[in-house]
Length: 293
Image 1 (tube, rainbow, N blue to C red):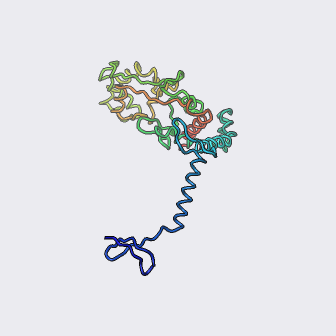
Image 2 (cartoon, rainbow, N blue to C red):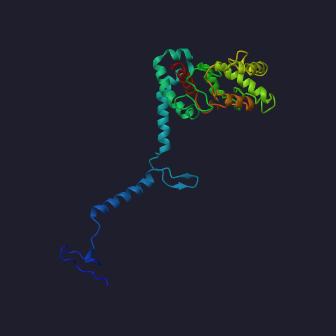
Image 3 (cartoon, helix red, strand yellow):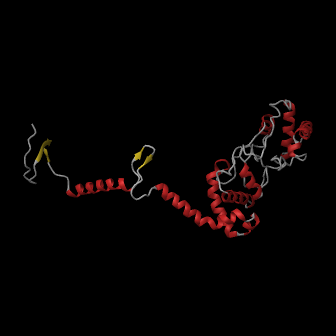
């Protein structure tokens, strides 16, 4: 049976609990702890009234201070826009040649453009702009639609193969899948295209197939890629005589492209980004290509 008694050493009463000869003292909570708890509870109650705290169906209590994170962020955004207004106005109005001639402004473009690129473009093109599987490298100065900042800006605004009324349209037909070429013709034209960047494959054993592929190329492919296979930026047709490939330049990949076709996609950015942001990115991307060794 629990029996409370007074501890002879401290003079405090015990709780009546005892374990292995050790008796528990009935010691009160320290006054400092009690004061701390009281103050924190009073502060919490006051804070409920001072700042937004309680949901009210479709809204919430606004707080007596009228301050919340949303208004704070909005104020900071406005302040940031005010600080950037001087150089963003120049980006929106000045010609690209004048901007690129101003090294101080270009330093701002490179710094800001890197952030914009990382937020909006890096998912496809990589943070370094070197692209990835099935996405173009933006650092090699090899362009489908042209690499000048004005052309890059236009591509960003309207996109490629999008619903935008001015969208750039680029599509390679599925020559094999849609029975425009038979199996042998697909392999012949692939052999010819492969030989353009791998001249060592033009051996006596392969020459017949390569020549047959050239005839197919002239009749089926030259309308877009040109008779010299160096592409056409008016229609976004790539140069097939260099070492730059989006989908890969191996024989198997070229056969797959001729057979099944290709159709890339780039979203439109004119509704998501401001004019200054689009022009900043156009300059940044152009700079990526021209600054490479």
